[in-house]
Length: 244
Image (cartoon, rainbow, N blue to C red; front, side):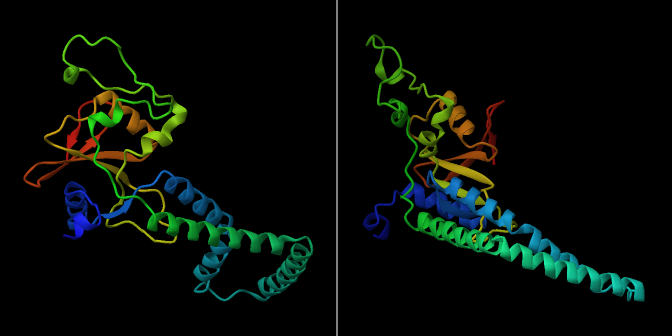
């Protein structure tokens, strides 16, 4: 009843249940999510040196007691740091750090909002690729001879239009042993698209374009049978799919 009320296809629920049963973290995919994650990671890198210096200080707590000369050098260095910090504050460095923290908080908020408002994943069907997502033009021959069902549906899409292919992805998935955090999840370990076992699937050339749009992240296809069995295929642009 809840699936019907929420307009969630049964195949989508079965794939999600399959991933969660293997303790993968599955997040609904959006075309903006990868860009938001990259912004959060870039802002976290800006704060990296300060965090690293604190970690180094903690690691040095258990070292042998310094000599008197080292203590004098440390006192002099501390004064230099104080003067430097004062100069940084006067030059607006402190305000810059505040802006970085504010931007990071804003990006994290946008990331949470994007995950909350993500659409319900759709099932990947062959008919979804009969139109060019860029301009709506049908790609292929215009002649009607031969059976229409036997025609291969492909899309002629340029490399710059990866976002159109990103709509084909259902879930962003993270490995169970990863360091996933809601505020800074990082790029997913793999993407998942959903197909029905009894319906015509997209062509290999279509899958290759989706794989290319995923960048360095691996791409898997979850095929769902009428009996509810889920089979995962790890798709690559070289060789044959690997059953997982």
